[in-house]
Length: 570
Image (cartoon, rainbow, N blue to C red; front, side, top):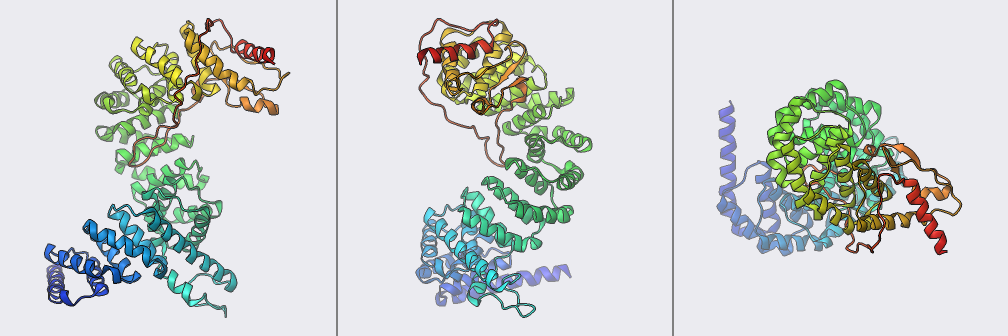
């Protein structure tokens, strides 16, 4: 029976190809689009001869294509993953902009989705036109819902309630759960953030079709919003979590890890019941996690400051060993950072496996990755193997120009926490970089550097000492006169300067807090390099000074001296 079905299928495709070739010269634009649609629905690419003929014919009639025909043709090309020649794609994009007012929501979404799927970057003009069209249609829908108290567009009215206007109903026909998820996916791939008004209206639309969302739609929705840093409203998240918990058994491993990663990127903590469902499902799927899945999962728990249950943590750590040959630099760095943030000490076996991969890939670590790796070692109080420490130091020296102020301060702190000093070349490079980015240091960064030198038992050299003092003065000048400051000694403790601006409001500084509680800033994407935050100013603002800070100096006296200087000036 199966052979008969395959034979019939092949016969149908062959028949369609023959009919297409025989009638190609008589086909108009709309008919050509329908022929492409037929091949796409059969999930069969036509022969090269037939495809070239269809492309040529479509190009001849492209200026007369209706909006519906154009959307149909674009959908077909994307579904078959056939990329038309550049000239035709450009003509289709131009025609799409001209026919935008004819589009239903489904047509507008299909055109944008198809272009993204075919890796064709639509113009900003077309993206805005699509946004405006969808916004208009959703606005009409919301207005009709309010006027008619209709439960859902496109359905027959019940209980004597009239349905929405036929025009808006027809234009919005087809904006299903799948179409909505495709729109979000296209926006995410383009890194295009729609207006707040459109976001709000689309969230209302999602609420209306959420009961139709499949596990894949649910995962894609959260992944897309996280890519755009689009934090969904509580009004949407409550029914979203209810739908997800109901469908949790149908999720693939990647879908589960994508949802968990999305929560962490948006810094949204799942409800306890949602977290329990996610954890239980992930535990059952842990053995099928690939390297990206396991890295993203542990990173997400760390970012949310949620320690996984022991069974889940054990399953994920086992999978790290399975996947370790396929861990790229970003994944390795994320794993080390996650272990540090969750206060997880790797076993000897884990550490050996991870360091083996790190040794092979250290030459490709970027500044953020290498900085976070050393920070993680220090946080869990594990000394890197000598060869690893040497490679980390060498790599830091190579990429030092990409170090952010946070990277610099974390590096000083990490070496000091491990009771190690940077090698001479790296020490020089760190000093130079510190002077270069000094204007980007936060008070906490400065405190970390003071603490590191105090722990090493030596003072800062003159240019760096003066530059850090000048940087702190900027913050101290904001403190009202007469405010009493009681700060702990640097020896053995760090200072929490995070809230120094709040002193003016009577908020005290936090004392005796370990520097290790300050975490580096890291964002992880499924397919992207790690982002390195911020840009540094070129001007160091350094002038000569004969002062330096030794181990015996206290942070209290440093701040007090700066305040005295400010008062003497005034």
